[in-house]
Amino acid sequence: MEVHLSELDPEDRISPGMDNLVRVCEKYFCLKKHDAKGDGERFHQWMEKNHPGVVLMNLERACAGARFDICIEGACVYVILSSRQMVALTRTCAIFHFSIVMPHRYIAGSCDELSEDDDKWGVSSMALVADTIDNAMTELIKDPSKFLDRQFMMKIFDDYKYLKPFDEWWEYSFVDGHKTNLVGNTKKID
Image: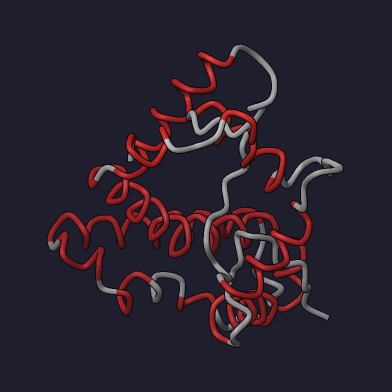
């Protein structure tokens, strides 16, 4: 690559360093601000259309601070995120998030709505949910390979699908093709 880089004409003002690469990425792909030179909103829409469900990380403050910091940060992020251990950790966290955290959060945050469907449901019913999670974790301790079994992991909360709001949320989030979209799914259940 050095051979090709040495062929660049200095008059073209091309600087291929890591700091410039990270700055260009932030300016063009930033999701939080709309840089006049960038196209973050269009990139976000393209990601939603072409890669739904992919975790999209925003570059933070690449254009602020020292160039040395940006260069080191960019290189570290690349090395860390591309390591097998980090990929494995990310996948593990995603499985845990989708199969346990999201359903638990929905049920905990919707106790009042769920009680309309079942007059026996209330905040104290969360003890049942805690037992469900505990039983699933006990099964995983006995047989850790079940963690990679989608059928097992995605059925942990099946006992609560009799609650219509939870079942509708589940269908919307995981079944009907809407799939939970960490890129920014904004559709809501009617």
